[in-house]
Amino acid sequence: LLGPDGTARPTIFAEMSALAARTGAVNLGQGFPDVDGPASVVEAAVAAMRSGRNQYPPGAGTPELRRAVVDHQRRHYGLDVDPDREVLVTTGATEALAATVLALAGPGEEVLTLEPFYDSYAAVIALAGATHTTAPLVRVPARGSAPAFRLDEAALRAAFSPRTRLVLLNTPHNPTGAVLSRTELGLVARLAREHDALVVTDEVYEHLVFDGAEHVPVATLPGMADRTLTISSAGKTFSFTGWKIGWLTGPAPLVDAVRAVKQFLTYVSGAPFQPAIAHALTDDAVAAWVRDLATSLAARRDLLCDGLEAAGFTVTRPAGTYFVVADGAPLGFEDGADLCRRLPELAGVVGVPVRAFTRPGSAADDALASAVRFTFVKREDVLHDAVDRLARLAS
Ligand code: PMP
Ligand code: GLN
Image 1 (tube, rainbow, N blue to C red):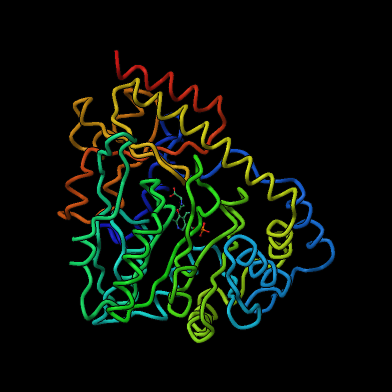
Image 2 (tube, rainbow, N blue to C red):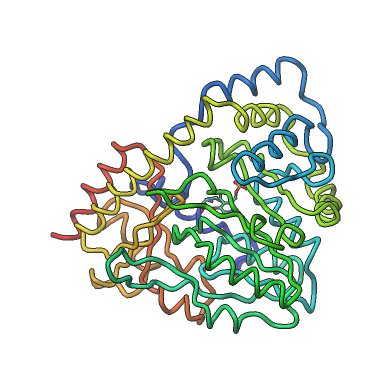
């Protein structure tokens, strides 16, 4: 986690946002919206502060947020969760992921993730002293429909071993935008049961799916509720990434183990934001706002994807999240990191090399060498500006 000079190495997102700030380029690197979430949610947080909810809240989370999470899991997925024993509120999904891996995996045990993977996974697996194994998502050119990233069944089977303790899944998937199908998840579930592994699912983009794609929580698959911890967060669903309110649901003994670690990471999480997110999770007008966000994101995805294609990239159109993976090889760039370093000067745009989400020398690393991740969770005028700038690459 430290650079060669002994100082903390910035994350790829911090590095690319700094590059954008330094060069004046349009920042399509770090994934955060440039428009805040609903005003009623802000008002709820302000009201909570004004009414004196400013001291340590309960460690497991305030009761109304735990009940709201339970209500959400029932309404959207038919899951039955106990608000007192099976929910833990965390400081974003990031803390839920860290506390889970630290609680449940250690030296001699393997944590299996998809590859590419969100950057914090590798870091927390290393902090836990566990071994990181991966199964690649591969770009499949589909006949009759658009190419997409899919799980490779043989590689997934081969990635399991008797030491596999956790399978850490992410759907909808950052960075590829893949939404894993019921069949793919069923295969993971079967293999997890065969190997007596637990499944941890990062579902922070659960509501950001397009074109009728269905988000399937692993916990809803037959026989999986008993061995699955489900993680989500308010950041992406409600466009409050800076509030850092997340949560985790699952069997009481597992949630308890994670809570034991969380106590010593952050103790508790942001008091006044918790009632505000409880409101967000249960309010009908906010639910409509989230649906509109997904609809507008689908349109913004098309705007950016069309622009990237016109500029000469090969694009894999995502079914969810707010990221698209574009391949720079047709433009003559074999190395995505090199392309990202030069993009501000060549086109005035910043992206993130997909290799920031792979391990050197892996199959996914090879396959995605020239790939760049761009985010489309920006205002339409910003995306139009980015697309105009990218057109310079084609000329
Ligand atoms: N998981 C994934 C896949 C993400 O993209 C992110 C970034 N938002 C996180 C976890 C972290 O979420 P949070 O900001 O709630 O900690
Ligand atoms: N999740 C966001 C992304 O993938 C960024 C979060 C962060 O900066 N750690 O871009």
